[in-house]
Every structure is written in structure tokens, then in C-alpha cells.
Length: 349
Image (cartoon, rainbow, N blue to C red; front, side, top):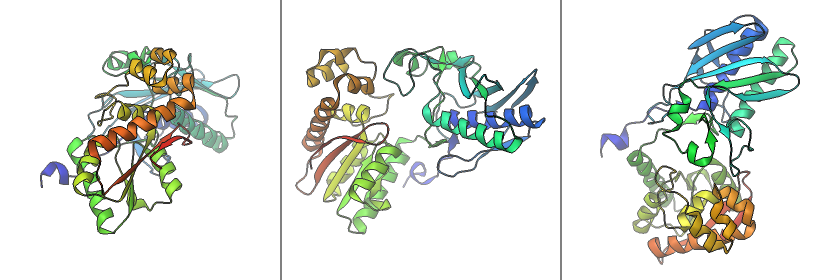
């Protein structure tokens, strides 16, 4: 076995986690009078990373803190970038703003509304939680303006899909768990294979591969599957399915959001955004709705066409899997979810 499949890769922290830590440090100066040397936060899954401050500046009625992003062993374009947060009083409530190098949303179909800074929902929740925590600690009202900036972010954004997605002027503040899982195709696919081996060894009749944490939670609850039945498929549908052909499990569920399942329906088995894209013209033809061709994302296409689109995508996704990886020893089904984890379509049941 190669070193690549046996050496554990070092994880890192998302821009959302870094921005949250910077927010906490800046509030400690604004409300508490002093910057910490390092700052710890609690991530959505309970991890408690500690970040050293790379920048600490105080102004008149404001405080500014920066964290250098460490993406671990992941080849992330933002690795080494400085994530800076400036906090100051707002006229009421928590207000998010985009500073230099953080993009603004200009097209629909993203989880953030047009005209808003491209700071995704979970990072917003994390920063909001920190504001509330610090406000309670220092006896302050949680009325804070949070401006996030990334020096050089506009140039870095040209290496991402942001311009194509209609995010103008810089990078996005991302992350659903706060943790960057190292991206290594060989290592990740090997871990999927080991998961299948474990499931087979335990005699499990049903396993599931999902594209992310939300779809995994939904599918696991839907079928009441044990943890070791959940294969960490991510974007590697092909890596999972090819192995299952030779090492079958009686029932295999594939779960994911509308975007990833649309790619699967269109024949992609590597679902990563950098290696496959939704063909919106073809999707419009599949859905029988020409407006879909002008969509910016699959989510926007779903907003245009409604539940019929999800059904339209689920069935050909199942057909693709069955035609390319079908086996008399495996029954496949597809579960499509929305961003909240609600099931919007199923095929193969």
C-alpha cells in the first residue's frame, strides 16, 4: 500500500472559522480593552481550535484582528491568506459587510441574497454566536458591524468559480463545519473503499454515499442506517461505484443536493466543482423549461422549475448509475435534498 493512502493528511480551517476567530479577538479589544495573543472558538461539530493573531489594531470606536488561514494539506487557493475582521458599533443588530477582497453577490441562485456580501450562512451563524457570547460576557448590546476583508482576495478569486457564479470583487467566506478536510483523491477514495470493506465484513445490507454532511444526515435518518453504513463519498461517486461493482452491497443509496445530482444525471462521476459543471442548456431540455438555460446555479434552476426539476434530475441520475455500474447484486436509489436537508425527490424506491 502506498504512503499516499496510509499517511494521515493534516486538516485545516475554513475562511469562516478564521473570520469567526478574528471577530472574537476584535470584540475582546473593543469591549474588553485588550487583544488576546491567541483566540479559541467552538466549531459546529464541537472542535475547539486555537488561532494565533496575525494582526491586531485598534481604532477610534473599532478594533481589527487578522488570522492567517491554514488549510492543512489541502491545496486550497486561500491557504496563507490573511482573514481580517473589523468590528464597530452598528445602529442595531449584527450587520455584515464586505471589505477589500471579499466578494458581493450579484446573481441569484446562491445561498446569500443578491446585494449581500458573500459570507455564507454557517459562517454568519458562527460569527453571530460569538457576538452574542462576547456581548453577554462584557455586558454589551450585540449591535455590531462585522466587516470581513482578505488582502489580495480579488486576485485570488480569479482562480476560483466566483466570477462565473456572479460573486464580484473577491473571495467568499465559506465553510459548513469550520474544518478543511485535506483533498487527496487517492487517499479519499481509499477511505471510501475501506468503508465498503467494513460494511461488507459486518454483513450490512444497505450503505449510502452522500455528497456532504447535510445529505448524509438526511439519508441516515431516512433509512435509520448505522454510522458505519455511511460512506464518505463526497465528490467521488465514480470511485465509490466502481469499487461496489466488484464488492457489492445489496442496497446502495446515493444522496446529495440538486447541483451534485444534476451532474450525476448528466454523466459526471467526479462531482467536484473544479472538474465538472452543470450543463444548463441540457438541463432546460430535460426539464422542458427554456428559462432553466439562463440559470446561474442548479439551485436557481430549481427555484425556476420547482419540484418537477428535482424529479427530472433524480430519475436520469439513477439511470446513469444503473447503466454504468448496474449489477444484479445491487439495488440503487437516489435521494435529492435541498439546502435545509428536506427531501425534494427520490428515484429507485
